[in-house]
Length: 172
Image (tube, rainbow, N blue to C red; front, side, top):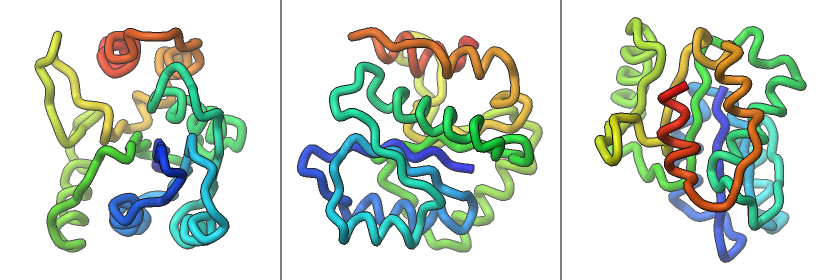
């Protein structure tokens, strides 16, 4: 399963997002969470790639994490996570992949066959070590845990999203 966080100030589905969805969809069912009011044409495009499209308020406090939260809430209510082995949290600032579909498939399969509880595309040492939140994959031991559910249920406040979102996810 993939929860994809989207925001576009111009309320458009950009070509980069469509490129991302093209690569993600063969590997995961996509729950697309947007803060934008998309045209009928863009919604039809999403229908070709996404299992579900959820629209949330535009000025949310937690940015991508509020979108992730809405997608996880949907998956919990729909009981889809019970049979899921991997959950991906992806946002529209992930511009790749910059490789062929075959290479992308091999990389994903290799990562998911490893013993890692979580993996991502970019390590960061800003403030403290963490995987940057624009593409994070977690196995079921992580996203089925009570700590993960508690983290995803907490309310967001204005500011400090990096500390309370991206960094906190890995502390939990």
